[in-house]
Amino acid sequence: MSVNLVSMTLKRLSDEIKFHLTYQDDTPFGSAIADRANHTIRTLCDNIVQHRQDFGLQAVINRSRELLSAAMTGALAEIYVKPNTLRSDWLYPPADLVNPVALSLEYGVGEILAQIELPAKLFADLASYLGEWERGSTAPLDPIARQLWDALAELDVLTPLEGESLDPNLGNATLVGHSTVRLSDGMTTILVDPFLHPKSDAYPTAYQPLSLRELGTIDGVFITHSHPDHFDLGTLLRLGQDMPIFVPNLERESVLSIDLAWRLQQLGFRHVRSLSWFEEVQLGTIRVVALPFYGEQPTIADVLHPEVRNQGNTYLVDYLDRRIVLTADSGTDGLGNINQMALSTGDRYGSIDTIFCGYRGFGLYPIQYLFSSIAAYLPFVPSNVWQVRQQMMGNADDAIDLAEIWNANRIVPYSDGGAPWHWLRGLGPCLDGSETLMMAVDPTPDYVATVATQRSGSRRDGAIASPVSICILRPGDSLLFEGENTSILARIWPYSSSSEI
Image (cartoon, rainbow, N blue to C red; front, side, top):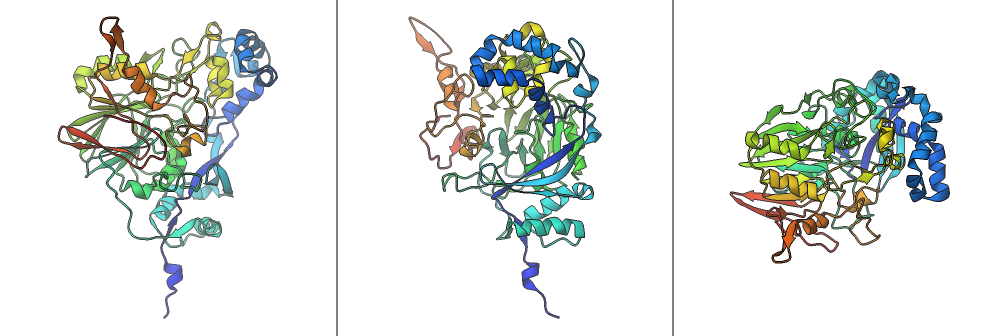
């Protein structure tokens, strides 16, 4: 009997595509996972959107109180039971009315190659199939899965498997990009907030996004919160159904927080665990502690319906006699702030070696939420702060304060994009000199270093710098821990830069 060797060739998913899920959202006002809630708010406030088009953003901010008062008594009143009280079906969109219906394939920089509608039955096994196909597989026997395989083959996004999975020397702490960090001690490796992008000719040939294969074997994944640049199903699905995934604990899905555990299980992931604040988990030789996530809420203090939050975790990772903290987009809100948390827990966990710390600040007047990815935050803002700027995340000074409180050796500024595959999608500052940087919104990581050199001072002594070192890592760069020493393993950075540890 002859064997068709061509049909037996192992194929894997191409590194030049990225998956996105499309959800059918039948809730009254929209959910977080389908992004329809943001669209609802913009639609109900279309007069404000039009005012910006006619007169500019400054005019909108100057007239915030007037414009928002009119909206609250007009179309936006539809989502309130009464002033200052939001409808339950806005706060808690019925989760069972939002379900995946299609798989989209992104090619290059935001180009949708195809959208493939899938039967409901296949979604329950989607993580299993895509994880297997990522590693290398032949065509599946299941006829429903075979239809998806054939569709991918027709789109030429299945490539022959060449060799085993890669496991390059990426050091012990790699900034993969934005908030994605790979931590490894050589025996155990974890990923935090995996958010990977396809390789593309749009980027310098020698500087491309890292793929899953290039990250090596992963033993577990930790998610800080449910915003799409931190919880990326397109990346997670390629990790497969058996990947241990740890997510923030959430009692009920809301318009501000996706129930990550349930949504992952809906797609066939079998090892999902919710972590409450201060809960610990041991993965091989790495210990991870879930710490509080404050900030990135509708306001920094009083808020309508404080029980509804953008729920999240920050993480402390203990390995190689080092403690690493990853803060993502955290900062200050009415429940607390991350610096107070560091003060209260310093004795419990001891000094920190390195903090991967967000620093963007992201200060917005509430009416600006309409023109951002968090439009759904606007209804939660009390009227007395409609014209008060809200600092959504910690800024450079906050990051340095945190490091000093925790007696950290260094800060790695992150959660800011950092590479062309981010800034070409509108995430973080452009670092190639192609456009003027707006420091008030997107400072560069080098700005943290500048702030650190001028922490205090006097006429006699001049500027006094922070004792904390600022370590600028570009996506793909790693820290290598060797005893008490730390060095940088740097990739080729095709733009001008400077760094230090």
